[in-house]
Image (tube, rainbow, N blue to C red; front, side, top):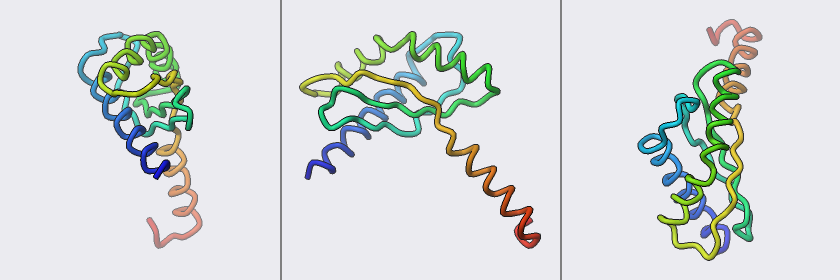
Length: 116
């Protein structure tokens, strides 16, 4: 039961943050960013927000700086749209899953010529 509630909270936060990033946030440092996952602690005090950023390392760093700068606004959006006892403190992290998957595909393709 508790795990199901946490999944619903994570999904709702992902939706709210994704909408805020795509529609209302106007920071020029923030490039093309996608919220890929949210992991909230059991006590709802902290939430890790995993984001995927299109661009090179400098653009990714600038986007993370912009997201950290907009932390208060985004946390306010979460508080306004979700009815939670306390609003988790947001921590933004880059999600490297796509890069790892592409690297793994390249390694497999190099190993097995039929995969090309």
